[in-house]
Image 1 (cartoon, helix red, strand yellow):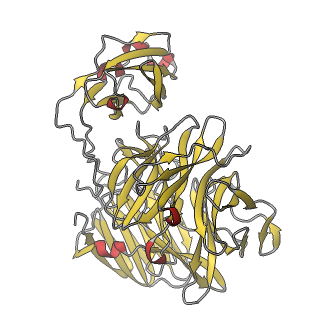
Image 2 (cartoon, one colour):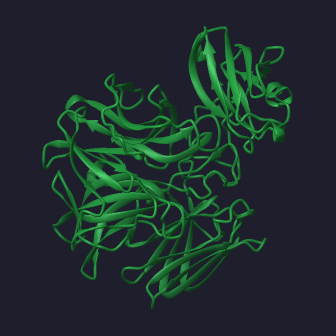
Length: 573
């Protein structure tokens, strides 16, 4: 499979050696140590996903230098993950390992396969050719990925950080991975940006371009076992490396869920604002120096200012997360309004996680919502943790979302990697029947990616559909798997039915998602990749994102009520 994501390209071009030591030191039924003579850059750890995590403390020169959780293989190896042992600068390290699985089911620790399968190599193969890896969506080289973090644009380069597990393809060991792009399509993997420390794992957050001081400042949640606090780090080299602030944390709370800071410069008050999620509401702060933050107000609780006075607004069926607060133009007018993005899990319209939003006014101190109905930015099941790039060019507000759902994100049928981000989308506001809604349009960079018109259904491509009244479009393959998309012009709804898509990995996966349509649809843009379908109204009034995992590519397109034009994509140019 051709891939768009450039790699650090650690190919296994040389032979590996097995980790050197006679046998592990068994210290109890769940505890062992293993000395490793460092002969290569990487110690390749064998992973078996069905097993429980083992906690590994890396000891070098009698000091703990790293701690991680890995599902070490007991009787089967699913894949390997690399641990950089050269970084410690010693000839030998010790792995202090505590297994958390039940020995009644996993057997004697001395017989675990991991002891025989640990290998060393000077390289790690990232040439992932799994059939479901997207061709033009951002993915990690390997390991688990969820929320996009810290996105900013500077000097012609888009920087994307993300929640990353370098030691397995399930959620764990939260770290900021890093990729860069000049066109929002072709991404180049960069070295790890921010790693866990004594304050905890590195959860979601944001970056701002501090133009006055020519630096980039990151804000993130330090997630310890019993607390979540907000920390900052500073980059003097355009986001390639960060120095953590010695005064961390900069914000703290007694609340259990206190996370995901999104900072931005507010020219209207000549200060920095920061919004973060606290349980089922958002806190808003201000600062002159990015270090000292003053609480301004909260939004989302029962005492929120809404169109009918004090009331509870939005969906509260789950925890609020990953906020954003941006000022947008209302199409066709000279007016601007504020959009507050609020991701929620669970509570989405079709189960699990989703992105809701609020339109209103923000004076630098308090956000006031102008509507009382709950509104969703995307009506698919696989669109979450939506945030925008700081300092985007031409005044644009470009968003990315995690393209999965917490109901089954850990179980989707991939191995070496899990999860992708959505195609980039530009946000604005539009009016319909006296109300203001969020507009979502595929970013213009996707037009530049469009290639030749083709006759065959693309595995990775775009389908443009000219709509004539109501519409039904079916993608199918020879195995009988299919996805049905339908536009009901009378009811003003659009739906996508993936109940006949491959779904044996999760009972929560089969679903039919349905969206309201604000006005008549004249044209649809459908982006297909190896494991996803994203549908947009060409006028930016509808967005629907769903994963699909066809066991063979869709080969047939049937359409009633419209004309479809299929395009290849210029992925490798």
